[in-house]
Length: 240
Length: 243
Image (tube, rainbow over all chains, first blue to last red; front, side, top):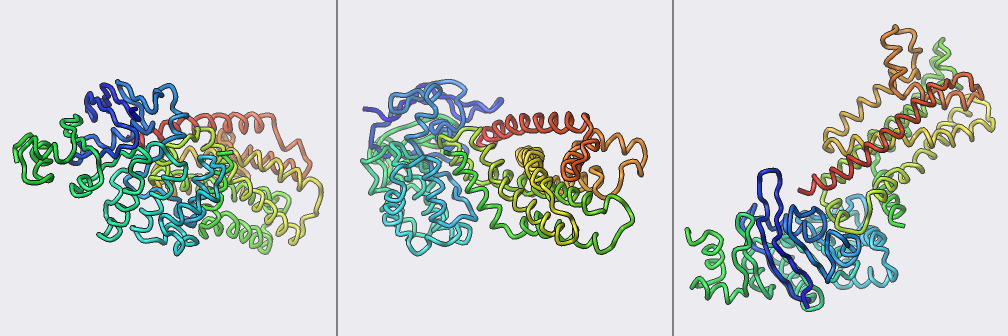
């Protein structure tokens, strides 16, 4: 069964076409990485898929529901970890978790929060105000919050951007732990991250989804030595 | 209730900002105290008239800090996250309004405690004034939401300060509008702050003659207009900020 089905999806901002007629099917439990250079249309695609902005044309079907008709129902089953850390600065880490649990009206709130504290090892920062945390901790908390409603679909927009190598590897471990349980759509600029974490990779350029496949398939397709070279070839049309 | 949950978060954000407490509570209390020591020979400075002025003055800082909170939220990724949640526009607007009500009540109680210590007689009208002032404060809160929806976090402080100045000069808290000429007097009548002050002053002094029908119409009209515009603008900005 497909978790997400996108048909002829287009988003225009005045004369600029940010996303141009893309179609894609993502399976339940799949980790799909969306790659592309800056301005390729990845974040706009994620914003449409998460119901934040409406498409200019095309359809988005999530868990058999139409995003235009069942927006609120769909919003109950997904969550997003935006590019920048999205936490309330003057609230402590625990208060942030409680606040978001309230937003999703979580019934077993305490159990859920304790589970996330354990998974993300948040004990040492639990009573610290979010704004006093390091970038790495803020990102960790932001991702922990995105799991508060046990989403069926999780959008991770450049989750490891700006993190040091250890923090990045720790997050990879968490993301790997989620694989198969929920459908994850990940955007990243790190090729190694996409290759290591994802089941399939989609490459976007100028708003178009120009290729989709596993990292091995994409390497083979353009006859490259490694995935980074394959990405560059596909994204630039072989110009570089 | 999502709106109460959001209100709780907003209240914590506001109350944990020491600067907002200084301007919303300490500065008005200081002014109330200091002007009673100076003994200015003008009716506007009598406790029964100046205390309502201080209430309105305190509300102008509520506008400023509400604007800053909304603009800050808009500028952060937190609203992107909330935008993908099942929260509705009404949850946001009512959440912002409700979070400010406890601060309004705290302000009113403290202002009246200080006023009573300075010589104001306690009557049941003080309770009525607190209740009426909560209604009046809705205009100031929604004005803050409107400004916060329009401008950036940096600009919200500047625009909020303009509201503080307008309240000082056009509400009649420091001097009667008639002292400055017909043109200025007309401006004071068109803007809502004089009407807000008259409503609070009339209630506190149990003098309904101060409250003209014009004052009530202007207050109601501005409150509804600002509320509707702020809802539309906030909703629009939630989408446009996320482009």
